[in-house]
Length: 368
Image (cartoon, rainbow, N blue to C red; front, side, top):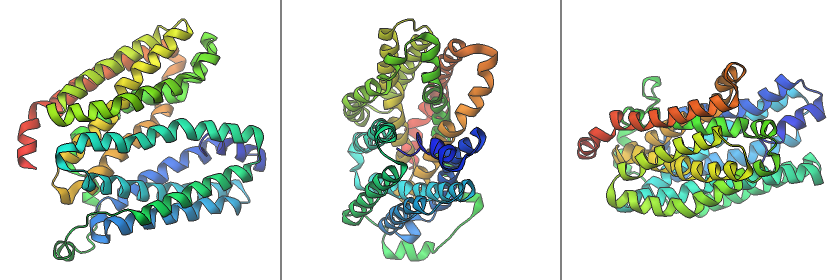
């Protein structure tokens, strides 16, 4: 909800430049990455539920700081702290979910959990833009604070399996910069960043592309179609992955993502634009949760926190920094060629999954 309005708030309230407004929006992602990097290896030492409550409480507290901001500089600081809190709280929540779900239903359960992000990505921006038209920024911040407090209350009610006391005492509060990432999850994280770049190109440029095509009205329904398709398909693909293995879901999803990008690159009508939305929803929408399930399946239970952190660090990096990197190429290739190149990248994601994980899947499961 905030990410679509906070840039406009910086410009209207403080007269910031466009570059400063961009920094206000983007510094949040950097804070989130830092929060994930630090908390990943400390979750089990601190306690899974305690980490989640600390994270969600800090998230609510930093949300309230928007009311106290009085300059662009303080707003940037608030956004950075807010991002760190999200990194801590969401990583702890993802780790808790990975431990709560029974092993034989891991992919299905993670698919259900990941729908929360899909719903937030669809509802949040819609509410933010609606409130921007009908209310003041104060009401937007108040709405965000209300939702944050509700999240904190939900966290206090959750029952989370914890590491046994003896194992936790043996580990202590170890922190090492050399262990910021989970080694076993890195191959899956590498595939994630490739697929994430494809989706980042849609998030960042679909509206501008739609203006070029004179399909602005259709573009307003793009993410609604995307979200509906994900909501309907993800529970099914999760059960399929639990029964048949990761390959039966990941390879078709990469192919669907590639086809969706190709349709988007060749779109000439509203129908083609919305067909692309559905295909990208079937592809990336299910690929995201499938790769997350693989990342936590290839590690021992005590390393699920690190695996969760590693996965989301790479996903956030692709979605946060991808638009900037891809934007550098648009002036040279145009939007259509950009999406054709993203179709090729989706095919490369399929090959990368096979080389980095698929051909080793049986051995990795045995080792974990």
